[in-house]
Image 1 (cartoon, rainbow, N blue to C red):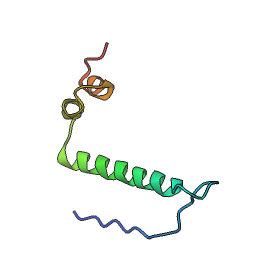
Image 2: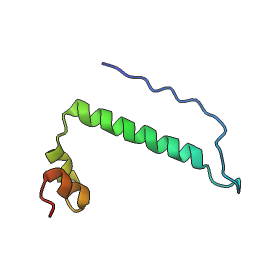
Image 3: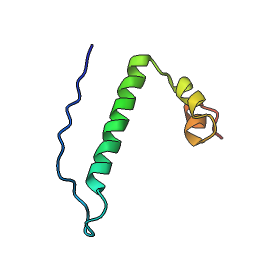
Image 4: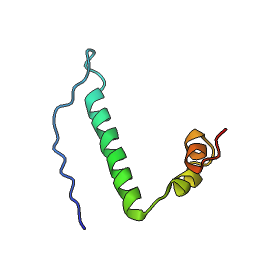
Length: 68
């Protein structure tokens, strides 16, 4: 299966100060998260696998089921 992600450049919303591209940063974060989830599903990543990759923090403990 093959996916194509088409992204169109648009003028970003820069907040009240006109300095920081807040909207474009939020959109890129959402796209990155969506791509990561799709790739994890396709590769068959399990909660346990995820926990091993996030071994030191809360997400790793929760994924592995060894949180207190």
